[in-house]
Length: 407
Ligand SMILES: *Cc1c(COP(=O)(O)O)cnc(C)c1O
Image (cartoon, rainbow, N blue to C red; front, side):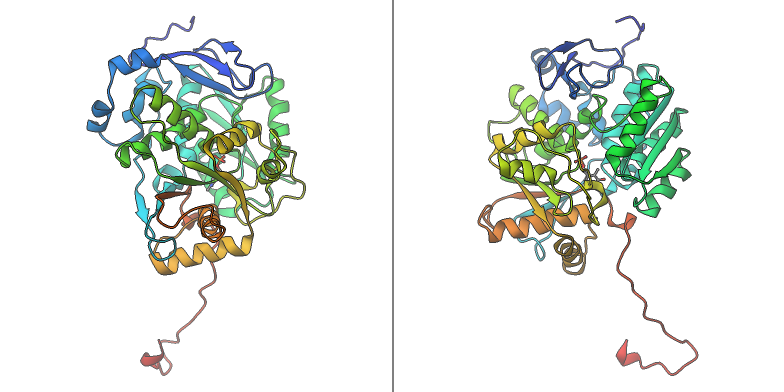
């Protein structure tokens, strides 16, 4: 370590490790992908951590993301740029989902999506390691979270969006101070442009899983879930899967907590949910493959999971298989129907990606993959307010005759 960091937070990071080969990398240095071109995972001295802090100590702290600080990589408090990363609630949806279904509503986080968890961590680490300019390809929510945190600490950002990114996301990104461009291509094609600039040293590449710390931020979903459910994980988790950061992060969190003795060996069955118009992980899962081929002509209303190719494909597939879960695809009509169902019957406006998890759950119950009595958690990863909603065009003339009984 040569950056002369004055560490003021107890953190137990020992090193980073290639998720494919296990090759070791130094902590406290700037890293992208491993030499094998795969994501790097942060490793901790869990024995020392377990001696320093107990789950009860953590449970007694304020319930925000930073209560987990010993299990996170940030070494200096002043690296953190916070916008209020609260613990998100578990909301029952008895009518549209059934009596044993809870929605983890991530739409309440800063910038209205769980991308805030990943980006608050990645930006803190970028700051700690001296990065001043960042670029990222995004379908919307990740770019918005990056723009917000980076603007707050004066890091410059260049953000590239596929042309079909929802208008509200592009405007949000611009409003929060980033230089944002629409590109006539998919997210991986935007990523290729970002990669070219990074190779020329113009900026640091913040693509999903191409820097090591977003996983650590997303991991807090798994930690939080355990604490909220009395240190007993649910029977099944339905996760809307694009790059898979959250699924990979939660799986890592469960492993770390078991090694700390904070939870037992019970794991939820992990269901990776994709849209049938972009389902590379489902196709690879069904074919028994370890890696997923690129999905051509990707199209779905659920923009956050429109990811034709994921660098962490093998990590998603491994977690799904080890857990005894599955990868499931649902069509756009079922997604929109689920969003409508949940809003009309339970008063909770899901985003389309969240709707996909509800649709997949309903399908899984019909297919006997999941029993109706099992404790299930669905992830709603953004507020439904950031997406186009069905028209509501009824109009009343205040000067005309109004039939009040017909309203
Ligand atoms: C990014 C995103 C996802 C997919 O998350 P990954 O962890 O990258 O798979 C799902 N839903 C929404 C709303 C998103 O913004």
